[in-house]
Length: 400
Ligand SMILES: [Ca+2]
Ligand SMILES: [Ca+2]
Image 1 (cartoon, helix red, strand yellow):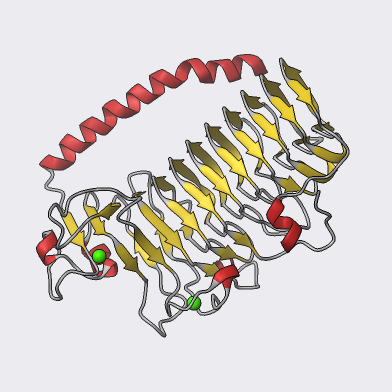
Image 2 (cartoon, protein in one colour):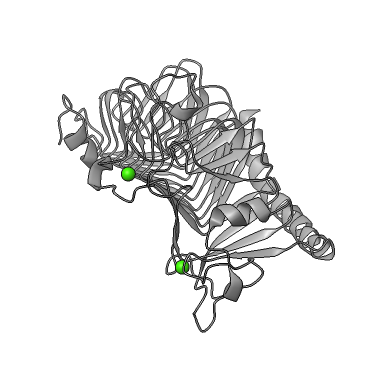
Protein backbone atom coordinates (compact mmCIF):
# COMPACT_ATOMS: atom_id res chain seq x y z
CA UNK A 1 0.00 0.00 0.00
CA UNK A 2 2.62 2.40 1.07
CA UNK A 3 5.04 1.53 -1.73
CA UNK A 4 2.34 1.87 -4.34
CA UNK A 5 1.48 5.37 -3.13
CA UNK A 6 5.05 6.55 -3.27
CA UNK A 7 5.73 5.03 -6.69
CA UNK A 8 2.38 6.20 -8.03
CA UNK A 9 3.26 9.74 -7.10
CA UNK A 10 6.40 9.38 -9.21
CA UNK A 11 4.70 8.11 -12.31
CA UNK A 12 1.91 10.64 -12.12
CA UNK A 13 4.26 13.54 -11.77
CA UNK A 14 4.95 14.11 -15.47
CA UNK A 15 1.27 14.07 -16.31
CA UNK A 16 0.37 16.46 -13.53
CA UNK A 17 3.06 18.89 -14.65
CA UNK A 18 1.92 18.80 -18.27
CA UNK A 19 -1.66 19.54 -17.22
CA UNK A 20 -0.56 22.44 -15.10
CA UNK A 21 1.47 23.93 -17.96
CA UNK A 22 -1.43 23.61 -20.37
CA UNK A 23 -3.75 25.33 -17.93
CA UNK A 24 -1.19 28.08 -17.35
CA UNK A 25 -0.97 28.70 -21.10
CA UNK A 26 -4.76 28.94 -21.38
CA UNK A 27 -4.89 31.29 -18.40
CA UNK A 28 -2.28 33.64 -19.89
CA UNK A 29 -4.12 33.88 -23.20
CA UNK A 30 -7.47 34.30 -21.50
CA UNK A 31 -6.27 36.94 -19.04
CA UNK A 32 -4.79 38.80 -22.03
CA UNK A 33 -8.25 39.01 -23.59
CA UNK A 34 -9.67 40.14 -20.29
CA UNK A 35 -7.47 43.24 -20.43
CA UNK A 36 -5.20 42.53 -17.49
CA UNK A 37 -2.95 45.47 -16.74
CA UNK A 38 0.76 45.73 -16.13
CA UNK A 39 1.56 48.20 -13.37
CA UNK A 40 5.12 49.55 -13.12
CA UNK A 41 6.87 50.41 -9.85
CA UNK A 42 10.36 51.86 -9.44
CA UNK A 43 11.57 53.72 -6.35
CA UNK A 44 13.98 55.76 -8.47
CA UNK A 45 11.48 56.92 -11.10
CA UNK A 46 10.42 60.60 -11.21
CA UNK A 47 7.62 61.52 -8.82
CA UNK A 48 4.02 61.75 -9.96
CA UNK A 49 3.85 58.74 -12.30
CA UNK A 50 0.63 56.80 -12.86
CA UNK A 51 2.31 53.39 -13.14
CA UNK A 52 1.40 52.79 -16.77
CA UNK A 53 5.02 52.42 -18.00
CA UNK A 54 8.58 52.51 -16.68
CA UNK A 55 8.96 56.19 -17.50
CA UNK A 56 5.94 57.06 -15.35
CA UNK A 57 6.34 54.25 -12.79
CA UNK A 58 4.90 54.51 -9.30
CA UNK A 59 7.63 55.07 -6.75
CA UNK A 60 5.59 53.34 -4.07
CA UNK A 61 4.85 49.62 -4.20
CA UNK A 62 1.94 50.24 -1.85
CA UNK A 63 0.30 52.54 -4.40
CA UNK A 64 0.87 49.93 -7.11
CA UNK A 65 -0.78 47.25 -4.97
CA UNK A 66 -3.75 49.49 -4.23
CA UNK A 67 -4.26 50.07 -7.94
CA UNK A 68 -4.07 46.38 -8.91
CA UNK A 69 -7.00 44.05 -9.42
CA UNK A 70 -7.14 40.30 -10.06
CA UNK A 71 -5.23 39.28 -13.19
CA UNK A 72 -2.86 42.26 -13.08
CA UNK A 73 0.91 42.02 -12.94
CA UNK A 74 3.00 44.48 -10.97
CA UNK A 75 6.56 44.84 -12.25
CA UNK A 76 8.94 46.17 -9.62
CA UNK A 77 12.39 47.49 -10.48
CA UNK A 78 15.47 47.10 -8.34
CA UNK A 79 15.42 49.04 -5.12
CA UNK A 80 14.32 48.75 -1.52
CA UNK A 81 10.63 49.08 -0.71
CA UNK A 82 9.22 49.45 2.80
CA UNK A 83 5.58 49.20 3.95
CA UNK A 84 5.92 52.62 5.61
CA UNK A 85 8.45 55.39 5.90
CA UNK A 86 10.75 56.13 8.84
CA UNK A 87 8.83 56.24 12.12
CA UNK A 88 5.95 54.27 10.55
CA UNK A 89 3.73 51.91 12.53
CA UNK A 90 4.94 48.36 12.97
CA UNK A 91 1.55 47.09 11.78
CA UNK A 92 2.22 48.48 8.30
CA UNK A 93 2.59 45.70 5.74
CA UNK A 94 2.40 45.08 1.99
CA UNK A 95 -1.01 43.52 1.50
CA UNK A 96 -1.12 41.65 -1.79
CA UNK A 97 -4.66 41.21 -3.16
CA UNK A 98 -5.79 37.89 -4.58
CA UNK A 99 -4.91 37.11 -8.18
CA UNK A 100 -1.99 39.52 -8.49
CA UNK A 101 1.47 38.64 -9.76
CA UNK A 102 4.24 40.74 -8.22
CA UNK A 103 7.41 40.31 -10.25
CA UNK A 104 10.62 41.90 -9.00
CA UNK A 105 14.10 42.05 -10.50
CA UNK A 106 13.75 44.51 -13.39
CA UNK A 107 16.46 47.01 -14.41
CA UNK A 108 13.76 49.70 -14.38
CA UNK A 109 13.58 53.39 -15.11
CA UNK A 110 16.67 54.92 -16.72
CA UNK A 111 18.13 51.61 -17.95
CA UNK A 112 18.71 51.11 -21.67
CA UNK A 113 16.36 48.16 -21.42
CA UNK A 114 14.17 48.78 -18.35
CA UNK A 115 12.37 45.47 -18.95
CA UNK A 116 15.56 43.47 -18.46
CA UNK A 117 14.71 40.88 -15.83
CA UNK A 118 17.51 39.58 -13.58
CA UNK A 119 16.35 39.19 -9.97
CA UNK A 120 19.82 38.20 -8.74
CA UNK A 121 21.37 41.35 -10.24
CA UNK A 122 18.55 43.88 -10.03
CA UNK A 123 17.50 43.08 -6.48
CA UNK A 124 13.99 44.09 -5.54
CA UNK A 125 13.97 44.10 -1.75
CA UNK A 126 10.82 44.28 0.33
CA UNK A 127 12.08 45.25 3.77
CA UNK A 128 10.41 45.51 7.15
CA UNK A 129 13.25 47.70 8.42
CA UNK A 130 11.14 50.87 8.39
CA UNK A 131 13.87 53.06 9.88
CA UNK A 132 16.70 51.56 7.85
CA UNK A 133 18.79 50.95 10.97
CA UNK A 134 19.06 47.14 11.18
CA UNK A 135 22.47 45.71 12.06
CA UNK A 136 23.91 42.19 12.20
CA UNK A 137 22.24 39.55 14.41
CA UNK A 138 18.88 41.35 14.30
CA UNK A 139 20.14 44.50 16.00
CA UNK A 140 17.61 47.38 15.92
CA UNK A 141 14.82 45.17 14.63
CA UNK A 142 12.37 46.03 17.41
CA UNK A 143 11.08 48.94 15.34
CA UNK A 144 10.48 46.79 12.21
CA UNK A 145 7.17 45.82 10.64
CA UNK A 146 5.59 42.75 12.21
CA UNK A 147 4.96 41.37 8.71
CA UNK A 148 6.64 42.53 5.52
CA UNK A 149 3.95 40.94 3.31
CA UNK A 150 0.42 39.91 4.20
CA UNK A 151 -1.65 37.56 2.05
CA UNK A 152 -5.33 37.64 2.93
CA UNK A 153 -7.29 34.70 1.50
CA UNK A 154 -4.97 34.66 -1.50
CA UNK A 155 -5.37 31.77 -3.92
CA UNK A 156 -2.58 30.14 -5.88
CA UNK A 157 -3.21 32.72 -8.64
CA UNK A 158 -1.38 35.16 -6.39
CA UNK A 159 2.34 34.93 -7.07
CA UNK A 160 5.45 36.56 -5.70
CA UNK A 161 8.35 36.29 -8.11
CA UNK A 162 11.93 37.52 -8.04
CA UNK A 163 11.58 39.32 -4.69
CA UNK A 164 13.76 39.45 -1.59
CA UNK A 165 11.63 39.62 1.56
CA UNK A 166 13.50 40.54 4.70
CA UNK A 167 13.49 42.29 8.04
CA UNK A 168 10.04 41.33 9.33
CA UNK A 169 9.82 40.91 13.09
CA UNK A 170 6.61 39.28 14.38
CA UNK A 171 7.76 39.36 17.97
CA UNK A 172 4.45 39.67 19.86
CA UNK A 173 4.70 37.50 22.95
CA UNK A 174 1.01 36.45 23.02
CA UNK A 175 0.47 33.30 20.90
CA UNK A 176 -3.04 34.48 20.03
CA UNK A 177 -1.78 37.76 18.65
CA UNK A 178 -1.44 37.75 14.85
CA UNK A 179 1.77 39.70 15.32
CA UNK A 180 3.58 36.69 16.78
CA UNK A 181 3.53 34.77 13.47
CA UNK A 182 4.89 35.29 9.95
CA UNK A 183 7.62 37.90 10.02
CA UNK A 184 8.39 37.75 6.30
CA UNK A 185 4.97 36.69 5.01
CA UNK A 186 1.83 36.21 7.05
CA UNK A 187 -1.02 34.28 5.43
CA UNK A 188 -4.51 34.90 6.78
CA UNK A 189 -7.61 32.76 6.41
CA UNK A 190 -6.11 29.75 4.68
CA UNK A 191 -4.28 31.89 2.15
CA UNK A 192 -1.79 30.20 -0.13
CA UNK A 193 1.66 31.61 -0.72
CA UNK A 194 3.26 30.94 -4.10
CA UNK A 195 6.85 32.10 -4.53
CA UNK A 196 9.15 31.68 -7.50
CA UNK A 197 12.83 32.69 -7.47
CA UNK A 198 12.41 34.61 -4.23
CA UNK A 199 14.69 35.04 -1.22
CA UNK A 200 13.15 35.06 2.28
CA UNK A 201 15.78 36.01 4.83
CA UNK A 202 16.55 37.67 8.15
CA UNK A 203 12.98 37.57 9.44
CA UNK A 204 11.89 36.77 12.99
CA UNK A 205 8.75 35.49 14.68
CA UNK A 206 8.02 34.66 18.27
CA UNK A 207 5.92 31.58 17.44
CA UNK A 208 5.45 30.22 13.92
CA UNK A 209 6.93 30.91 10.51
CA UNK A 210 9.58 33.56 10.99
CA UNK A 211 10.00 33.44 7.22
CA UNK A 212 6.47 32.44 6.15
CA UNK A 213 3.52 31.45 8.32
CA UNK A 214 0.53 29.82 6.60
CA UNK A 215 -1.15 27.87 9.40
CA UNK A 216 -4.26 26.92 7.43
CA UNK A 217 -2.85 27.18 3.95
CA UNK A 218 -0.43 25.92 1.38
CA UNK A 219 3.03 27.22 0.53
CA UNK A 220 4.50 26.55 -2.90
CA UNK A 221 8.08 27.56 -3.54
CA UNK A 222 10.15 27.03 -6.66
CA UNK A 223 13.85 27.94 -6.94
CA UNK A 224 13.79 30.02 -3.75
CA UNK A 225 16.25 30.59 -0.91
CA UNK A 226 15.08 30.69 2.72
CA UNK A 227 17.87 31.68 5.07
CA UNK A 228 18.83 33.13 8.42
CA UNK A 229 15.29 33.34 9.75
CA UNK A 230 14.83 33.05 13.51
CA UNK A 231 12.07 31.61 15.67
CA UNK A 232 12.51 33.58 18.86
CA UNK A 233 10.70 31.57 21.51
CA UNK A 234 11.95 28.25 22.85
CA UNK A 235 9.02 26.36 21.38
CA UNK A 236 8.67 28.23 18.10
CA UNK A 237 8.06 26.16 14.96
CA UNK A 238 8.91 26.44 11.28
CA UNK A 239 11.54 29.14 11.44
CA UNK A 240 11.78 29.08 7.64
CA UNK A 241 8.28 28.04 6.62
CA UNK A 242 5.29 26.98 8.71
CA UNK A 243 2.36 25.60 6.72
CA UNK A 244 -0.44 23.05 6.63
CA UNK A 245 0.70 21.75 3.26
CA UNK A 246 3.51 22.69 0.97
CA UNK A 247 5.31 21.98 -2.25
CA UNK A 248 8.99 22.86 -2.48
CA UNK A 249 11.13 22.41 -5.54
CA UNK A 250 14.78 23.38 -6.15
CA UNK A 251 15.00 25.50 -2.98
CA UNK A 252 17.73 26.17 -0.42
CA UNK A 253 17.06 26.34 3.33
CA UNK A 254 20.10 27.67 5.14
CA UNK A 255 20.69 28.51 8.76
CA UNK A 256 17.09 28.91 9.86
CA UNK A 257 16.75 28.52 13.63
CA UNK A 258 13.64 27.51 15.52
CA UNK A 259 13.07 26.88 19.18
CA UNK A 260 15.38 24.73 21.17
CA UNK A 261 12.78 23.20 23.48
CA UNK A 262 11.35 20.75 20.99
CA UNK A 263 11.78 19.76 17.38
CA UNK A 264 9.57 22.14 15.46
CA UNK A 265 11.18 22.19 12.02
CA UNK A 266 13.85 24.83 11.54
CA UNK A 267 13.60 24.83 7.74
CA UNK A 268 10.05 23.61 7.16
CA UNK A 269 7.24 22.66 9.50
CA UNK A 270 4.30 21.22 7.58
CA UNK A 271 1.66 18.59 8.14
CA UNK A 272 1.87 17.26 4.59
CA UNK A 273 4.63 18.41 2.27
CA UNK A 274 6.30 17.46 -1.00
CA UNK A 275 9.95 18.46 -1.09
CA UNK A 276 11.98 17.85 -4.24
CA UNK A 277 15.62 18.56 -5.07
CA UNK A 278 16.18 20.96 -2.17
CA UNK A 279 19.23 21.65 0.00
CA UNK A 280 19.06 21.99 3.78
CA UNK A 281 22.10 23.20 5.67
CA UNK A 282 22.65 24.26 9.27
CA UNK A 283 19.00 24.55 10.24
CA UNK A 284 18.13 24.16 13.89
CA UNK A 285 15.32 22.13 15.36
CA UNK A 286 15.44 19.78 12.34
CA UNK A 287 15.55 20.71 8.69
CA UNK A 288 11.98 19.44 8.23
CA UNK A 289 9.25 18.41 10.63
CA UNK A 290 6.41 16.80 8.69
CA UNK A 291 3.51 14.36 8.86
CA UNK A 292 1.28 12.12 6.83
CA UNK A 293 1.72 11.63 3.09
CA UNK A 294 4.82 13.78 2.98
CA UNK A 295 7.30 12.90 0.25
CA UNK A 296 10.90 14.08 0.39
CA UNK A 297 12.93 13.30 -2.68
CA UNK A 298 16.39 14.08 -4.00
CA UNK A 299 17.36 16.41 -1.15
CA UNK A 300 20.68 17.05 0.59
CA UNK A 301 20.76 17.51 4.36
CA UNK A 302 24.01 18.72 5.93
CA UNK A 303 24.86 19.99 9.39
CA UNK A 304 21.29 20.33 10.59
CA UNK A 305 20.60 19.75 14.28
CA UNK A 306 17.82 19.25 16.80
CA UNK A 307 16.96 17.71 20.11
CA UNK A 308 15.51 14.72 18.16
CA UNK A 309 15.91 14.18 14.41
CA UNK A 310 18.64 16.52 13.24
CA UNK A 311 17.41 16.55 9.64
CA UNK A 312 13.95 14.96 9.69
CA UNK A 313 11.35 14.72 12.43
CA UNK A 314 8.60 12.48 11.06
CA UNK A 315 5.08 11.84 12.34
CA UNK A 316 1.95 10.38 10.72
CA UNK A 317 1.51 7.62 8.19
CA UNK A 318 2.70 7.04 4.65
CA UNK A 319 5.83 9.19 4.59
CA UNK A 320 8.42 8.59 1.86
CA UNK A 321 12.06 9.69 1.90
CA UNK A 322 13.73 8.87 -1.40
CA UNK A 323 17.16 9.49 -2.96
CA UNK A 324 18.34 11.78 -0.15
CA UNK A 325 21.78 12.42 1.32
CA UNK A 326 22.28 12.99 5.06
CA UNK A 327 25.70 14.15 6.15
CA UNK A 328 26.93 15.60 9.43
CA UNK A 329 23.52 16.10 11.00
CA UNK A 330 23.12 15.73 14.75
CA UNK A 331 20.62 15.28 17.56
CA UNK A 332 21.15 15.70 21.25
CA UNK A 333 18.94 12.69 21.98
CA UNK A 334 17.36 10.51 19.24
CA UNK A 335 18.15 10.24 15.53
CA UNK A 336 21.12 12.22 14.30
CA UNK A 337 19.57 12.43 10.82
CA UNK A 338 16.04 11.01 11.15
CA UNK A 339 13.66 10.51 14.05
CA UNK A 340 10.66 8.37 13.19
CA UNK A 341 8.23 9.11 16.02
CA UNK A 342 5.77 6.56 17.47
CA UNK A 343 2.99 7.88 15.20
CA UNK A 344 5.10 7.68 12.01
CA UNK A 345 5.00 5.07 9.29
CA UNK A 346 7.86 5.87 6.94
CA UNK A 347 9.91 4.41 4.15
CA UNK A 348 13.51 5.31 3.41
CA UNK A 349 14.51 4.39 -0.13
CA UNK A 350 17.94 4.83 -1.77
CA UNK A 351 19.23 7.17 0.94
CA UNK A 352 22.78 7.68 2.20
CA UNK A 353 23.77 8.48 5.77
CA UNK A 354 27.32 9.68 6.45
CA UNK A 355 28.83 10.97 9.69
CA UNK A 356 25.61 11.81 11.49
CA UNK A 357 25.55 11.69 15.28
CA UNK A 358 23.20 11.34 18.23
CA UNK A 359 23.09 9.83 21.69
CA UNK A 360 20.76 7.13 20.42
CA UNK A 361 20.13 6.14 16.81
CA UNK A 362 23.23 7.73 15.39
CA UNK A 363 21.76 8.08 11.91
CA UNK A 364 18.13 6.95 12.34
CA UNK A 365 16.04 6.44 15.45
CA UNK A 366 12.77 4.60 14.98
CA UNK A 367 9.88 4.40 17.40
CA UNK A 368 7.16 3.90 14.81
CA UNK A 369 7.05 1.80 11.67
CA UNK A 370 10.05 2.17 9.41
CA UNK A 371 11.30 0.43 6.30
CA UNK A 372 14.73 1.17 4.87
CA UNK A 373 15.46 -0.16 1.39
CA UNK A 374 18.79 0.14 -0.40
CA UNK A 375 20.22 2.67 2.05
CA UNK A 376 23.89 3.19 2.90
CA UNK A 377 25.17 3.95 6.40
CA UNK A 378 28.74 4.94 7.12
CA UNK A 379 30.63 6.81 9.81
CA UNK A 380 27.59 7.58 11.95
CA UNK A 381 28.48 7.75 15.63
CA UNK A 382 27.37 8.70 19.08
CA UNK A 383 29.01 12.09 18.69
CA UNK A 384 26.57 14.94 18.55
CA UNK A 385 27.20 17.37 15.71
CA UNK A 386 25.17 20.54 16.01
CA UNK A 387 24.92 23.01 13.18
CA UNK A 388 27.97 25.22 13.31
CA UNK A 389 25.97 28.36 13.93
CA UNK A 390 24.23 26.81 16.91
CA UNK A 391 27.54 26.26 18.62
CA UNK A 392 27.62 30.00 19.08
CA UNK A 393 23.95 30.66 19.64
CA UNK A 394 22.85 27.84 21.88
CA UNK A 395 24.51 27.58 25.26
CA UNK A 396 24.75 24.15 26.78
CA UNK A 397 25.30 22.29 23.53
CA UNK A 398 28.78 21.21 22.69
CA UNK A 399 30.36 21.69 19.30
CA UNK A 400 32.34 18.98 17.59
CA1 LIG B 1 15.02 51.55 -8.42
CA1 LIG C 1 15.00 48.57 12.29
